[in-house]
Image (cartoon, rainbow, N blue to C red; front, side):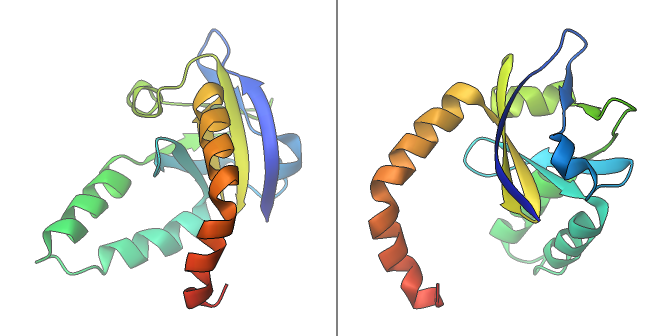
Length: 143
């Protein structure tokens, strides 16, 4: 389970450290892909496999399903965690998420989200101000 917020910097060689307490939950390879809300999603291989199977089972005849599959699956890259616990984020994914030097990694149960720190701070401030309204809407889902 991944929880918490961690701040890191992308180094000169474009590598990003994975939080040390998350590394025990990971193999040597992980999948990073375009996420929602302007971030990247980082999945352990087993969680990625489950999500990819769900996405691939969406109806091919629906335009939204095809679009979502393209964004998530074609945008994905399997990356290796080096001996120092770092990953190399491909340039196209850094551009997608607007990642600069300072990054926040947020643990979101079965995945990690990688955010540009400034974007994360803005998103978090806005969302925290709306959390009561969000909770009201989610009660219909049993949350």
